[in-house]
Picture 1 (cartoon, helix red, strand yellow):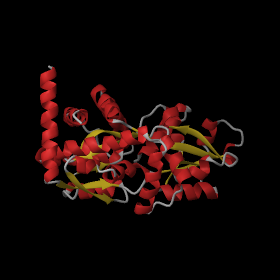
Picture 2 (cartoon, rainbow, N blue to C red; picture 1 turned 45 degrees about the vertical axis):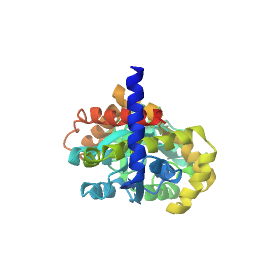
Picture 3 (cartoon, rainbow, N blue to C red; picture 1 turned 90 degrees about the horizontal axis):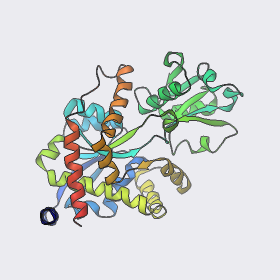
Picture 4 (cartoon, rainbow, N blue to C red; picture 1 turned 60 degrees about the horizontal axis):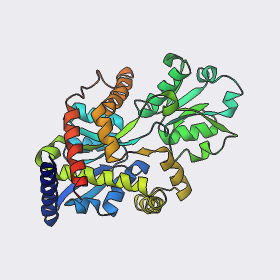
Length: 335
């Protein structure tokens, strides 16, 4: 058994050393926000190059825009939020390889204190206007928070708004409550005299995941590069775990390059709420079925909102994802 393990490790290492001589060019899908940082870091630290990959990162304004580009083959791998990942699997077998980050603590329901006025949260939620992004993980958490407080979804006075308008309306008092996430909600969270965080995904007991993704075509045609991509990005996640202060220096560089107007203090706040996963954590969650369960939970919310007719069948995706994750682990362990 030990000899077989050694043989596999040597074979994988040799394969990637050979590919390094003629790097595989791939285009990666990302977004200019905090979640896009680990992929940038993997490139910055040379992790893609280590695995024989010449990576170009393309930044899309949102997951929906990226998905349309992915269908046409403009990119081969990257990351996305849960809704585009779900739609991508349903439409063109986009593979969610494993959880990049969990946002249970990051997505929050904030209420203005002048709307609370010492009343019960459950009563307030039925009286005030609540801003949220329709068909999103924000709405998933909002509905879970309503369940947590015993409030019927039909009793919520939801105002469909995009994130910047939600924050603007919350500041002006046009809405009494709104869904937010870090780092743009820094001022709200740090102004307890005006606003109160009444709930988040963790409090409500719902899990929100953002997965790393590869296209089925990429996995079929260039499996070594797909494995190398996954090993590299999870190595970047591991770097963040192992270097809690040093990686913030890189974050400030990332912000400058991608045009993000946030400070180091705001970055520290944001990354304290984003639970980036290591390769071992991602593998464990995929093996146990938790990642599939989390994606299914989000899909059910989207079906309930009318975005999908039915929850996609993720059963065929799990073994593919496990194969890629296990191969990435072998590559990592062979170093």
